[in-house]
Image 1 (cartoon, one colour):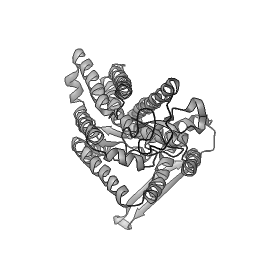
Image 2 (image 1 turned 90 degrees about the vertical axis):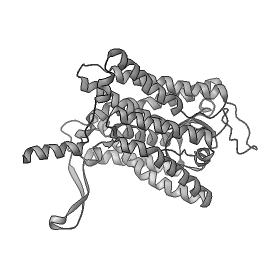
Image 3 (image 1 turned 90 degrees about the horizontal axis):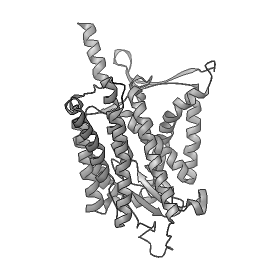
Image 4 (image 1 turned 180 degrees about the vertical axis):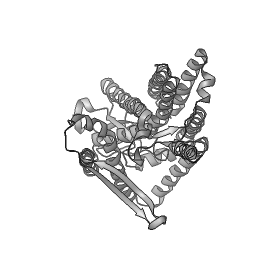
Length: 379
């Protein structure tokens, strides 16, 4: 969690590989690296509005991303298929995230911050357009009548020829998808030119929702490994070093949600931001999405574990904000979110006598399912 006072451009955050939370400034929103800047003391109303908005924005991608994760494997494109995280992936993830974070730290120390952020801006410009287009596509589809002339297109790149021909890209889309892409491109241009906080949030919400929807843990044990590893990662890099804060102050990208604490005074031109890293949304979010899919697998027409995890997330995020403002110090949000989002669902499962069943629940990657079906046909 972080609060920032630094004009219309945002300092980014760095984490897994570039998503997490930290506090780069003091609790009143003043940049501690520049003592000549006039200190802005946010009002209680402004602070409450900012953090209330951040909590609400954090809940949206977790809720809708979890719902979409149940059926995302039925997508028509390979890009709609979920990426399954195994226990090996989960164990390596904090190490890879740490190397990426430290690598960015060295890059900003050695090379010009301006040129690095220019490259990152173009990279996230393309990713943001694709993520936002994928996010709004289901909503746009509902706006058009069934008799809408919806033409189908296919983008196909192959390598080689004959029997050695290999698909590199095979993307199917239609007229509605093109409309989504046009809207997303407008937002992308707005972000590149103005770096406005609303454009930043649109891309940030899209990244978060896509992450929760398309990143699937294969079982609860893998979730525990991932959350446990990133718990240590978050605590170490926030409390143990200044690496994360240094990268955060240099990194400009829509990998956090922001809301101005001076919104009531300045409106859309406000520039004293409280922010929440996407890692504090996506990492607990993919575990909560797993709980929803476990609920569905029980065939009891109940969403007990999903709602339990969802409420636990609200409690953990609220506790993070409370502790940060009580002690006036940076707080790694996963320090509170991981115990809450795992502990409460496990306790409920223990009370209901379903803890063993929860840990036995296993999801098979789509590729494995296709291989099994092929083997059955051959036999």
